[in-house]
Image (cartoon, rainbow, N blue to C red; front, side):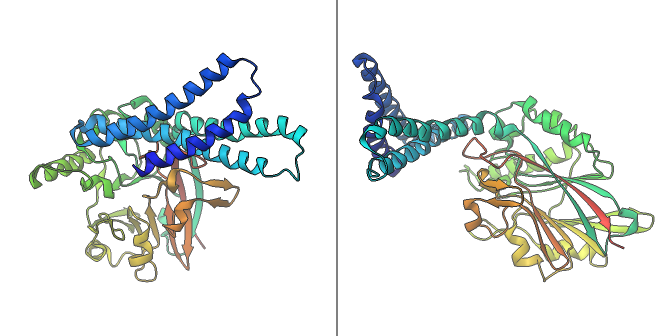
Length: 397
């Protein structure tokens, strides 16, 4: 109801601002039509939100996510441009000292239209284009403790697929599969959140994801959404069956799922360790991970790579507390919205997560936070394209 009230208040303000533009239209019929369309959209959106809220528990889960994300996208694409429109129009109206009455007749409508339409078109682009505009982030990292036999090791990291959000549009993700395979990686790591909540989201995706190829192996860990903690289950057995199907899916696509355990890669009598913990995050995210248990098997191996879905785990249990050299995480999505220019990047998510996107270093320990390949909630990406991470590891002489 607070959301509906906010929409109504902003739309009332936007409507009054709109009059400065429609008053320039000589046709009364056209002005009336614009006003009717404006309020039809507003009333329709508010009604849809209320109806969805009332009927949410009775909607089939397979339709629920699609309805929520569609309504979310529609709300954001309307709400943000209108806020900017109201702010710009208000500033212009109260700037009489700068803008004369004659100038305001032209300047206010033009700037008002631009302030509303430009953000709208940016959001539309983010929903229909940018959300599937995959980007490779390449990094070459040097380590003094990387065995010479692994010099030049090529790693692809992907994260946060949220396959339910793709609504079985297999061809969209097949483009990303081709990009990944063209990198000819030695290892592919997936750092969690395969689904939004349910195992049935995976139907048909095995044929797509099985195409991923890596010379030395494919490894994965679970993310917070993979446990089904955000859904209501009739019984504990039903929830357990759901996660077991997700675990089986990894076997079906030839990924080794690491559940608080480790794998060892050997080349020319030299070894590196691949460690995978279950999800570990600060509350309200549950802590299934047991890092010490997973380290027992590889305590004597010099170079260790950790897969841990939530980047807060690095700060709390890894950095300065272990000899893990490289940690790979995801989870944040970079909030799916950011401003980036060359090496500078900013997103509101930084106020929630200290490490939220890209590469971080502390002494000789590294953390890389993948921006996610899929999306959740808001069906778009603004300044935060879906990521395929490509890391080349080098032995520092």
